[in-house]
Length: 432
Ligand code: GAL
Image 1: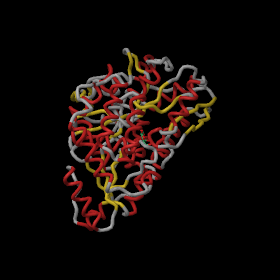
Image 2: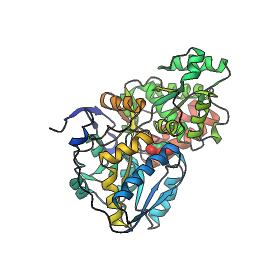
Image 3: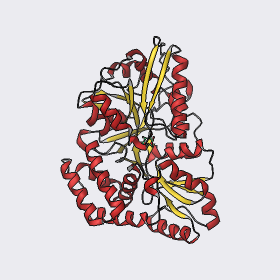
Image 4: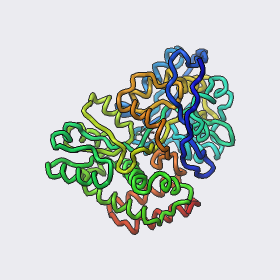
C-alpha cells in the first residue's frame, strides 16, 4: 500500500521569511502503514524535559510521553522540569535565564514559528536536526507547512508533537439547553446569547487572564472573526495596517465582550475559567483546545464547541515542539526523546489526553474524542492562520509589546489609545 498523498495547500502567514503554506494530510494512515524506525535504548543516565504542562490534561499527556520513553529507555531517569503558567507565561522567562546562563535543559517546549526561530535558532542556541529527521522519516511525516516553520535555512530545528487550535468557543450544553440557546457563530449571536445568559444570572463568558495570554488570545480571535483570515494574516506581514477600521471594530467588540465576563478574571487562570463553565456558573469560555484536555481530565463531558464568532472555516493554529539546545548535558538521551515524540504512536498516546491533534500525518487512530475528530477534519479543510498568543505569528518581542497593550486595554478599555499602541508595536517590530 502507498502513503496517502498530502491533500492540499492551505495558506498561512508569510511573515518574516516563514512558510507561506501549510500542507495538511488527507487522513491518518492505518497503523500497519506507519514507518516504525527502531529506536535503540539510550545509555543509562538522565533526561531533563522543560515545559509548562502542569494542568490536568497537560500533565496527563506529558506523562503518557514519559511512559513511552521510559519503556524504551529503561535506564534513563526523567527529570520533569515544569514551570506552571499557561502559554509559558512564567516558563519562558526561566528558560531564558537558563539558556543565557549556559544551563540549558536537555529539551524544552517551544512553539513552532517565530518563538522557535527568532528567539532560539537565529540567535545560535539550537542544533539542527537534519540527520535525526532523515533517520526517523520525519521529512515526510509532518505536513510541509509545519516542516517549513520548524526549519530555518532548510534545516529542521525541532520536532512538533501536536497541532493546537486557538479559536474555539466552549459552552456548557446543559446551561444552553435550559435556556433554549444555540451556540453562537457570529458576534451578533454571541451578544444575544450573552444577554440571555446574563438575564438568568449566569456569567456569559468565563475569562481567566491572570497569565495575560488569555486576553491576548481573546483579541486574536476577535481580530480574526472581524477581519477574516486574509486581512488577519496581513497584520503579521504589514499588508494589513494596524490602523485599519477593522482593528478599531475588533477592539470595540472585545471591549463589549469584556463586559460579559466574570469580575474576578484578573485573578483567574484559563483552567479555572474552565471550572466556571463546568459548574454552570458561566455559559461559555474562549480558549484553545487544551480546554478539551482539561475537560477530559476533569471528567466533564456536557460541553459543546464551535469556532469563535466569525471564524467558522478558519483554523487558528499553533504547535508545541521540542528541540536540541547546544550544550545539552544528556545528548543520547535527548536524541531518543526527540525520536520518540515525533512518532505516530507517541502522538496518538499524547494528543487525546492533551486535547490536540497529531502533527504526524501517519497518526490519528488513537482514542480521539468527538471534538478532536472534528478538529482533525477541520485541519484538513479549513483556512489555516497562525496564532499570535502562542508564538506562531509574531516574534516574542512583538508579542510582549502587544500583550502589554492588551493588559492596559483590559483595565482602561480605551479603544483609540490601544489601537495607537498596537500601531506602534508593529512599527517597533519592523512591520507596518
Ligand atoms: C499553549 C500551549 C499548549 C497549552 C496552553 C496552556 O501555549 O501550546 O500546549 O499548554 O499553552 O498552557
